[in-house]
Length: 425
Image (tube, rainbow, N blue to C red; front, side, top):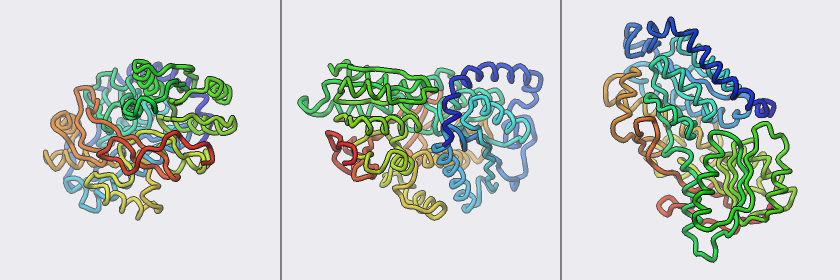
């Protein structure tokens, strides 16, 4: 993963709004004629023949700050396309994925979707990784009347746009993903619950809201905040922040993270030899391969995160997904990143809409997904008017160097471990 892009993210965010406005102005004269562009759109171009390929475009982070998760998303999209094509495609049309690299840049993601829709004239689009990129990307999709199924952008600012074409392909808004950790902690006997807490939060539309939601719940329950810091994306060295965390000596550390700063936090805490009794990370710790490789396999045990798919998932289609994934990419079930399952689920939704309606245009996808519940790898999904799903996540924990669901009871495969083992334990 290139670290250089990470530290330029704040500058890119500032440029995004201007870029979007510029594109809107430039396209104003043509938007009406291409309003639902692509051969599979609900209006505009004539309908294709039944044998024409169904081309789906997606901008994914293959380099830059989000590359680890972006590559997992790409793997999920491509695996789904392979599997659906083995079954004859969608309504007799073979699926072709057109995936381009956005370099983890909010500016580049706008350019990519603009080109996919207006130049490549793809039939449909899938979303990128991260709320940071989903926000500007979804605005482009909305402008051209495209459905926007996105597996990895569920921060509050995504839904604040109030877009009716957007569907977050996870069980709940990500700000709620920390609720399962708070629920578990507050369910413990009073003597076992943490008395003090620290919060280290990346200034990111995904990360900080999760930690702040947990903080509000913990403070309401009487868990005292002894340290809280929101750090900018360009912060290169997190050791000063972790030094302050260690000095505050909290019982629980809640880290609002993406992948790179999650790795940095753990490595700093290991060097400081400070291990909190409880530790939750919003992202990074839920990567079954990258996390142990970046922080050391001996340092993962006891850390918690949230997930919608995990090894042994009860979803009916999970065994077939695992078999197909390991056949294509190798490894085992425990090597599968949840982001791949989320991306695969976006494709499952298209299959379901086509099977139910006999159509696969953007308008049909949008209107159909706003009605009823739809089964996927990550659960039965339904959405409100602005694309927020209405379910919940599972709590996962590193136990014996493997990610295991531990709460709630109906998904648990092991008893949660606490206090967290010391580093190297």
